[in-house]
Image 1 (cartoon, rainbow, N blue to C red):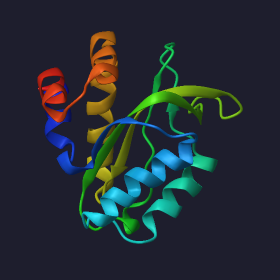
Image 2: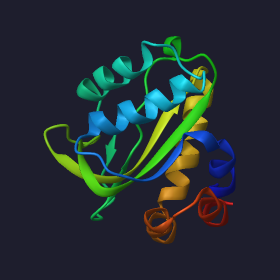
Image 3: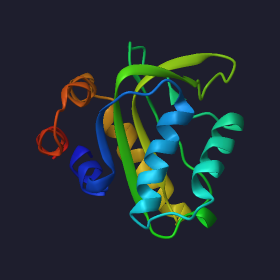
Image 4: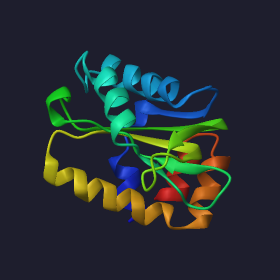
Amino acid sequence: MADSLFNSLTPDAILLGVEAKTNEEVIRLLADRLHTLGYVKDSYADAVVKREQSMPTGLPLEREDNVAVPHTDPEHVLKAAIAMATLKTPVDFANMEDPDETVAVGTVFLLAINDKDKQIETLQSIMGAIQSPEILDGLKLAQTTDDLKVLLG
């Protein structure tokens, strides 16, 4: 699973050691990168932020730094991509399971999926990888995309 996850990531949209204060700042940073690279429409960042408010994606993994997988509808996507950020300091995302709670998130996978069927496959790939404490620890320590390739590939 981890191998397919690394191969699914968009290399130019991987940001390591990001400093951000809010989940919206991280989402917009990654969305702007995808937009600059030609993967998403102008409407994408706002659509992801809006969806996150009503359908949160913070995954509680019972760690100090959990994972979030924000995304939005395919209509905002030009071509499929997955952006990823690791954060120097975790930011709060609303808990997917209980939106009234927050989880501290240290890794964000921003999905730009233009095929609903692919979305489930991609989420399964991410979920498979993040079940491993070793992978989660490795994500936190990764300094380069080569580190990620060794970890996930």
